[in-house]
Image 1 (cartoon, rainbow, N blue to C red):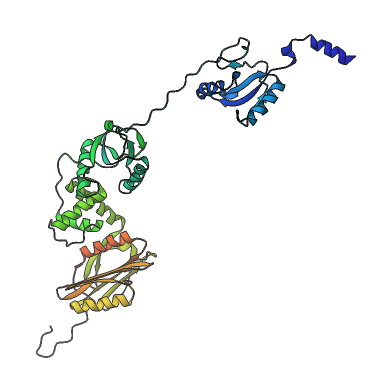
Image 2 (image 1 turned 45 degrees about the vertical axis):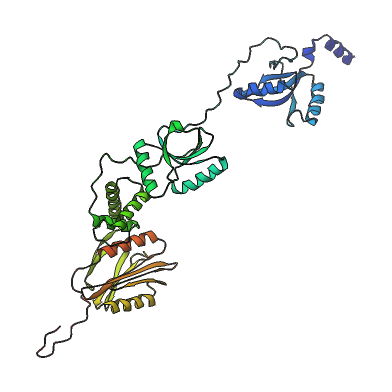
Length: 442
């Protein structure tokens, strides 16, 4: 009896109060992506609707449908591949407004506050090169070849980038730069065969969108007026320290010195003006010497004087014509000074001793009249022995340095070679024999 009364009551209620509409949820979008996505679905189905979700999202669905119809239809549409496999049946709730999409929408929902239409954001514009001048290094027609060209150019110019060109090609570029700097450095790079002769300076307005961004290179503009060249002997010593000059320190501007100056400008890229670049190199050398603790060593045993890294060396002992300095605090460095009366044969004898004791491992020898040079290395250390015949004496040095610091070894050896000089008499010279009666000592 109670069941019959319930059915009679239910028959008198409005349909909306008895069952809520269902939908097939197929997608959810934020405002900026909503319009186009909903329109695409409306081209496939006549009954596409949208309704709001929490946190600014909006659902795209098919409906309204009865729950039973929604269950049947969602399975068939998934099986046919017409909707995403993660689509599901949902009941939005009586207080949620369904907004039809497109002309084929079904019954209109009850009047409610309209969801404001959100304008689509403008399509992002391609990045354009920053204003300034650019060195056009190379132009390539195919994109794959352009990417390969950029990778190759970045070995010499890590800051280079890739831009589209108005003619449909791709350009490898270096910039932006001050126009005067671009012109000056292009001439330097061409003279050093670092860029092809057809490279040129282009304005940013002559380039298209950026494909792969580069960085502004640290290439300063030339000074308003050329700087005076420092004394040439100082320039040559600084160039030797930089590893670009192996000629004599004679204070003359010869072809080898000019080539070394050009090589240093290309390597350091501090200035296109030779005087400015050499002054900067000398300042960097001075700073390095202070950092390395180079100081003048006046050795009484050999009478020799030279610049040496004394914070890495400690006096050990003297042996005949040798004065030996071992490593300080485990630095791995050592220095042997030698000086004795003699000439070429004494230099050759020293060469054999250096090799036999392993001071210079597997040495490469340079032997000239009045001069020897031995250079070699193993996994532990680098050795260099250099000697001269000067004023009737064979003298020079052997430097032992950790193998891990090859650049430091080359620079310190150059400083020693340049600064080695006789300070006074050698205390470790053998005593002169007593004079015979009626004769003077030689």
